[in-house]
Image (cartoon, rainbow over all chains, first blue to last red; front, side, top):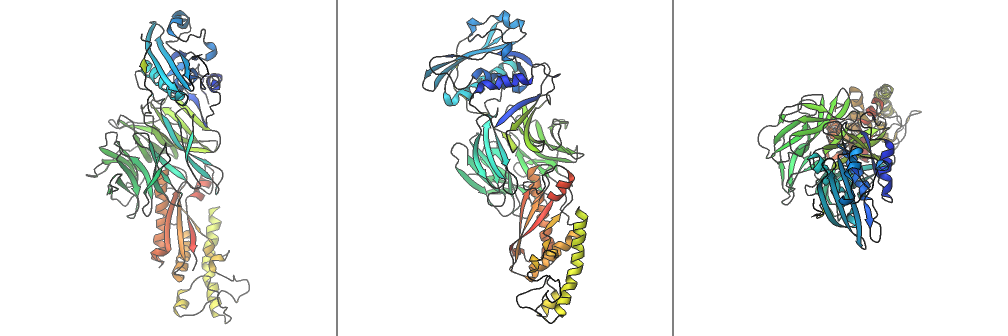
Length: 447
Length: 181
């Protein structure tokens, strides 16, 4: 449900208007803002002009405006409310834009320079000071137009909020379609706005726990394709993959070390689920836990020094922390609620998001590691699998709505809520990629 | 819904061995037919047992008897628990004794969990449930090579609702015969 009182600019009609210009690009996932921030920074993103032969397939201005909108931090004006359509700085009359109350103004144009080749020019202005905050000329191609738009979104976000944007990123997720016992599962990778979904694996057996390599080129995941849980690593670009864990019993919960050389994982080959670290080059295993309880879901701190994992050694599942070298005792770090599992570090290492269960409700909560303060961010009853955007501003998670698995995202302050809806079937186990490859920018036009 | 099923399983457990004993006493043994439930004393005596002979008794392998205790192949669990209930112990015991009496028979114990909580924890929980059933079977004389445990966690629910009625059905271990004898 859209809560209009929170975000008057965020009417459903606006959302449709922002998406329709995208033409042939059909998204498997569409994103709806369900709750926004009061006081989001009002800006205007003018649809980009086109020059030269061959119109570009995507409307960069629309992609940028939609991205800005999704962040909840910046509220773009509806396209029909724009009073003028400037495409470069010298066409801008700042007084027009002050009347509309916008603080930031983004304009630009796309010039076709050859078959599938474009140059995108873009400028961002502070309307009240009538100054340019950023200006770039970006040579790009058909295939990279969306990436270019996302990169422009990142620049706007960073200039206006002072924090890096996470629009030039991707998400990996698992879909399930059909009814048991003929269900089919697939592992997909899409842009963070839900566009360009690509299936990288289809299976008749369940898939879970995808994990991005720190360089964003590979995914580790758990597959039941051989009728039991085993761990694979797959190169996203080539589809080439390797079975890395196929020990007797469980092979689950893969987590990359921050340097990408090791995988922490759960194996039950020695009797019950324990945390191990697999060295990818040497193929050596180091066992880190030794406890008759369930120990699983290891995750590395961003500096690589510690691991947090789920254990029910105290009776119910709770999160514990231990040294990544395996030395010393593990110490319990969650105490609120009767169920805390699937911890994941914020990119700065200061917070942990987790599945927090209390009174039969399972929600996403955020723990401040220094103070021990816990805040519940989501509001449904079967929320799971939290994953941070690489800039730490949003958390994507899986939930259930109308008897279907869906994805949702929430800002870490709990104020912005988005929903990501698949056209059909269930979607789950979403993980946000690291920052994506960047296109080279030329600072021009200069302020 | 759960109670009548367990109750009937329990009753069958009480009734069937008696039927077997009656079968043993009858003179008309038929080759190729084995006891509905292996009776250790008669097996030790080298007797050829049979369930046939009484009107209405099931003929054929006990595993195929739709009314037999061995037809029950699912064991249910409480939330976040891997403790086999008293009612279900009878089922597990019956399968354990079938395995003991048929050393080339083998089962896979498929452990499952309901959807609540995290998927990987549930994967571990499903395995723990499978192992709990395995331990009981081993204690009753089944051999380790006869039992495989595999956990599917919450990935293969039999009921897709989001309430206790469905969750109860999903917290289970399925006993699946991969080889009979």
